[in-house]
Amino acid sequence: MTPPAANPATRTATTSTASHPEYLEALYEMADSDDVELRLITILDDPATCPHGNPIPGSSHPVDYSKLVPLRDLGPGRKGVLRRLTEDLELDLDVMRFFEDSGLMPGGRVLVERVGPDGTMQLRVDGKGVALGAHLSDNLWVQLA
Image (cartoon, rainbow, N blue to C red; front, side, top):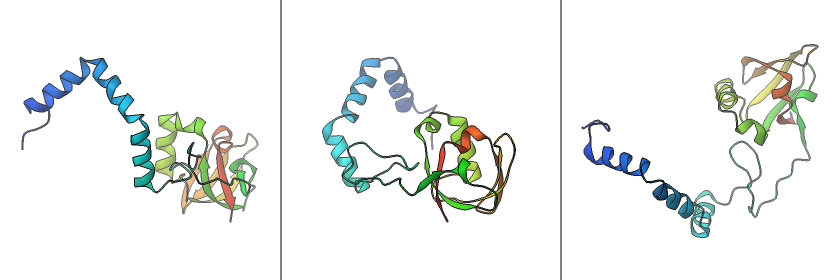
């Protein structure tokens, strides 16, 4: 098997794409078309939320967040199931990697072990110890367990 860098077809396509921004622009326009949107809705079965628990604009399924509370509101000994990471957090790749590595993703089971005077939380997430600062715990929403 030829490695991608040594494959002339791959090298040409990559060089061609990078040197022709109008090609990339056309790809983005196609991806933003109504046909592509409808196809994605069909393939994904019209989900109400993204994988991080945020509502998808245009979804036919309403999202009810009335039973969710910010993780920061839980005191020691309280448990919850993580349901939503706010959009602000999705923009920070390092934070998202930390959450994934720590199990802090929707569906994760959280136990608050301790809360420091500055709001730092010591958590148990699916059995694993995790420390979380106040800014991050304010942007995670849980359903009480």
